[in-house]
Length: 302
Image (cartoon, rainbow, N blue to C red; front, side, top):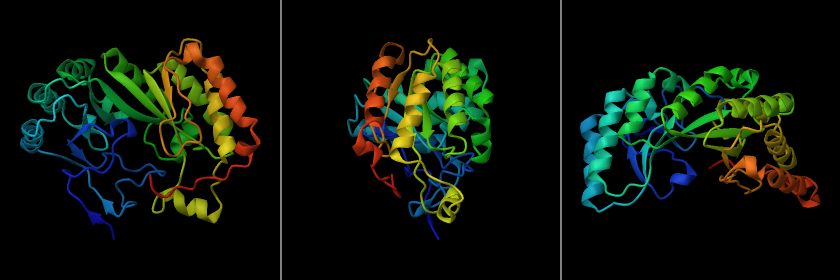
C-alpha cells in the first residue's frame, strides 16, 4: 500500500523546471483518471490526494524562499493542475511571488483543459496580469478515440478551445504529446489528428514524450497481457516525423524532445522555419540501421 503524502510535498515537475523554485499549490490531480498515468496513484511508492493548500501555508513557503535568498530563479507552482484552484487565490499567490522574490524570470504551472475552460477570459487575463508566464498542458493526442480510451476526460475540440483561451489571455502554452499512445491500431489517427489540433492551436511550444507504461497504472495489465502493444523506437520516431510533416503552414511553435523517454533530442525554435530540416533529420534516424534495430528502453521510473 503506497504511503500518502501531504500536498506540501512535491511529486513531479517538468524537466525544464529542474532548477526552479518549487512552490506546492495543489496536491495531486483534480482528475487523476488517465489510464497511462499513475503519478499520484502510488507508482513511485507514494500517493497524493487532490487538495488545495491554504493560502497561509503557500505564503509561508514563499517567505522561506525569500529569506533564503532564492532570488533570480524561475518559479514553478506545483501540483497536478493548479489552475483548478480559485482565480482569486491564484492571483494572490502569483502576486506574492512577484513581490517577495526578486528578478523572477518565469512563473509557471501545470494546467488541465477542463480547468481552463471553467475560467472566464477575464479570469485568465487576471492570472496573466498577476504574473503567470506559461502553463504546461497535456494534449497527449488529438484523436478523440485515443483520448476516450485513455480516459483523458476531454476531447480534441475542448483542447483546442482551452489552448486558444490561454494564448488569447497572453499566457504562453506548452503542450505535451505522447508518441505511441494509440499503439499500432490508432497510430495513423494519432498522427493526423494530433497534427490537426496543433495546427488549430499553434501553441508557443509543444514537446514530445514517448509512452512508457509504469507498474501500477491501469494500462500496465493490458500491456503485460499483450492486449496493448508498445511501439518500437523506430515507430515512435516515425510518428513524430509524420506529425511534423502534417502540420499546417501557420504553425510557428518551438519543438522539443526534452525527456528521458525519447529516442532523439532534436529541437526547433520555430518549426515553420525548421520543418524541412526537422523532417530530414528524423528521416536520417529512420533510415539508420542502428535505430531500426534499437531495443525499447522500457522505463519503469521517469
